[in-house]
Image (cartoon, rainbow, N blue to C red; front, side, top):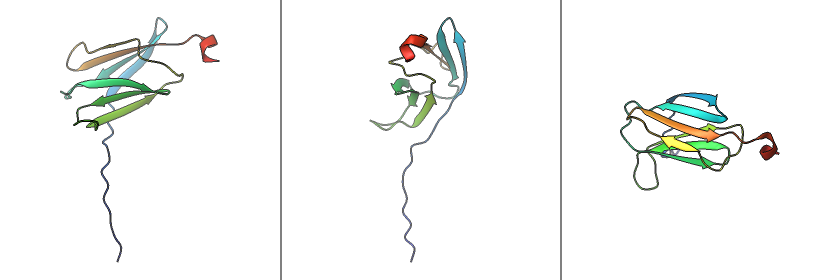
Length: 98
């Protein structure tokens, strides 16, 4: 008889967003409409990671946005309202990428 096993998967969450360049920075505007939890922003290699909600170390929602360059940390993170999150990331100079 075939044995079926179940596994728990973390829910992937990708908010609606706009990404553009402005004054030497990548600017991300994310629409968080309907999301009441705090949003944590972190960096993992070349990925910008957004996590929201959850218990302990397990976020209820998680999203990764790959970037075209490595970075240390976002320049600035703002949540101007309950619905809008803005993240600014300095674009490294060409010499820093080599």
